[in-house]
Length: 368
Image (cartoon, helix red, strand yellow):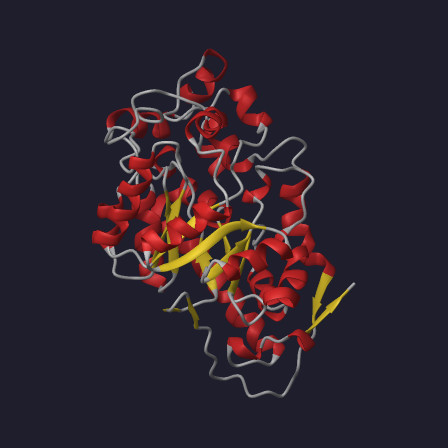
């Protein structure tokens, strides 16, 4: 549905990944290598799918990951995702490159919400975003650590996708044959990045590719001292998004992070890297019980969430799992996608013979 609705450069921005897109495929196929082992006759008339993530209760062990420029996919953008998350009682996040402001999102819901922080060369911008999150009552900051340089997203190179989207000659027919999207984009509120445009014009007043933005605007000198300083300046719940090695998981514990999101940026950065689910056991063996562990990426089914918890994760998360639905139908689409996952998690728990998520333990999983 999203592919039918969106001009191809916009769809390919959501759907595409780096280089040969091997890692993107692995992120989901990795779940095929683990089998659930159900119990029966367990009395599952009443089940509890809730859990605690970063100090806030979530109705499901599922986080809607922060993703950028959602206004490009549907005119409701992050507003639709925030409202859908609030309706289902879920954690969700907005990106530094969100098309709705920190303050606007905070006013929509008092549910659990995180802000994804990109560390910019402009130190004043970094400070501004942290202070705005503090003033707006955001529950957590997730520092993205895997975008020191941009991955080579070949689909975006071919299409010329930028933020804000440009009507390039090669794609003009695609825009012309998607009139609903095009009219929404042209006639509704202007595309902007309100968490950035107080400091920089790139991405709002000046059209740039995501690769150009990452490569010119973000701080390539970011290191563990930077992360520790941001955690201290923020003062609230703090996660590192993009941790893939056990050594880095240990370092995250040492700097006082509350959680790590095992993530390869949806396969959009280092192609050929491991899938988050494949790395989960090694990281759990190293820091399990010392820090919350969220498996981010490749989640398409409720059973993927259940497998993640059986392997030791606190929760699972993803972006594409709701972005396709947002692009297809706005807030009703996001609600439909969450509803499908909710049904699958509930059904899967009953068929496994468990009544609460803390019963999803390693003995209920076998590896091929």
